[in-house]
Amino acid sequence: MAIRVLIVDDSAFMRKIISDMMKEFRDIEVVGTARNGIDALEIIPNLNPDIITLDVEMPGLNGIETLKEIKRRTNIPVIMLSSNSRPEITIEALEHGAIDFIEKPVNIGSNFSEIKSDIEHKIKNYFNENLLDSRVLQKNPVSKSTQVNRRYEALVIGASTGGPKALVQLVSRLPKNTRIPVFIVQHMPKGFTTSLAERMDRESQIKVVEAQNGMNIDSGTVYLAPGDYHMVIVKDQIMLQSTEKIHGVRPAVDYLFFSAAEKYKEKLLAVILTGMGKDGSDGMSRIKEAGGYNIAQDKESSIVFGMPGSVISRGVVDEILSLEDISKTLNRMVR
Image 1 (cartoon, rainbow, N blue to C red):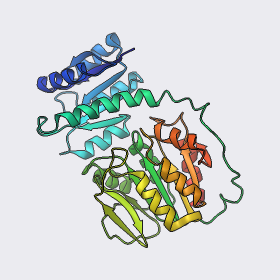
Image 2 (image 1 turned 90 degrees about the vertical axis):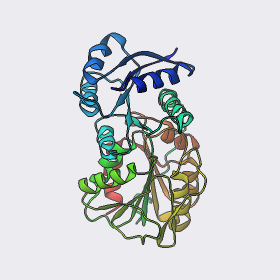
Image 3 (image 1 turned 120 degrees about the vertical axis):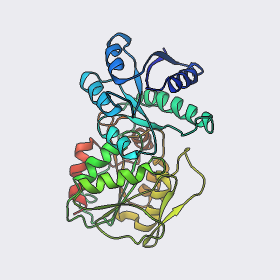
Image 4 (image 1 turned 30 degrees about the vertical axis):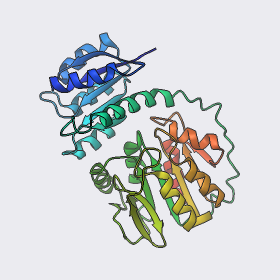
């Protein structure tokens, strides 16, 4: 059965381009288009789409206002079409319930195939990966009695689709007396991570920065990997690398987890949050081998269960928790 898509964009050109793209996708059907938020809200009840692509910047009812109203009225997932000229608006949209975003190119002809692939991948994977049945995944939590009381030296977090909202929630609740460094990889393009780091820093009691190459590691600081760079830990510094993408992404969670496992060993605490794909599975396996402690977000609180589901199925997770319970657990462990 085809995934039914509604396209909302004030540009007739963009509506046609995206519609034509989707006509070439198997199992995806464009059921309608709208030129603004008001029109979209009028036709959504009749069209009943499975997913909506929504332009961020539109006259009248803009993308953020339209998104808020869609989420107030329905549970339909929304993917934003965003310009990198105002990444802070995209971060706001993700906090208000958009599941993901696609970066709208300045010249669509220059990377037509890339944006086409991105749209197909994000729409299909959202539905396919949420079909994972958590009941059949291996759930074999180990005894927490000794590990919960261990004094950890670092926290690493990996996230993708749905991650920005989850990260703001987790990081904003970290206590002021957090005594260890926190390292985060969120799948996100260059430029958008700057806005995400600034957003988390404003909301948090501890310092949040977008990592820079050669930066010294300080306790009680959160380091977010910048878009388009892998972040690894070498001795007491952060190193950024432009090596090949893995799992089709850069930054990749696995690179961070590998380097952190080597440095911190059994004193490492790791978390995998909502996201598409399997990035982080190999890294969490390495952390488990080194004696670290692994936590995965549960299906019910994940926007997309791909990454948590993948690590759970490996049998390398010590706890499977809701986002709320992850926050409570981290607050105990990082003090």
